[in-house]
Length: 172
Length: 105
Image (cartoon, rainbow over all chains, first blue to last red; front, side, top):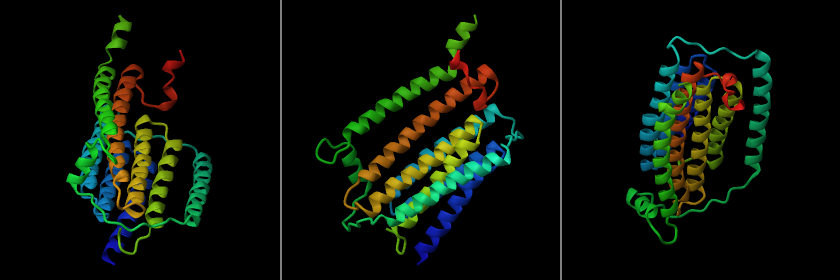
């Protein structure tokens, strides 16, 4: 019963903050609301007993990505900067179309019967670590290595793009 | 699974957050706001993976491990996107999506 109340509380707050995040006119507030959504999402993972995933969510998403977005906002905007709003008609028809899509998705999902399978769960960190580096059946060594190379490539690319040497040379 | 919570409840939450993200994506013009909406959508998708793993395949860890990979890819994507946004800002002094037509020549 207690877990149920906590789930509904977390889910309600998450939806509220996500709506606030896309509707506020201040970018810095949008970033902070996004941070709240990410922290509450980690709360849902904790409710699922996925502690390692919740920890990763907290460190990478709310600790890394949200802070990176806040810093980017501060670099390109004055803190008092307000976004301009679209005309109300645009909000109405875009919101209407998406609301129709949302209701259609929810109704379709309700009609689908999910086959629940009960089984023993082992999501301890040691099991996950073994699975990540295992070459055998059910191992994830290939995606793990691909992600490693991707992260290295992204680090190099981000430095090169952000330094902007190419543009400077062209101007000369 | 959480006592008293069915898979439909959790999927409904992730669906709503995903559509809120899409709404933000089609109504905003600022590049950083677009990035924030993308993050909302990605978060909803990761929640979907985790839910399916928890409710439908509790003996496996596929959904769990792929959520980890998706978080890593999302981090990479944000780092690159912010590098591009800052680089564009230094060129045009603007982060408005309407002003981004550099590649059109």
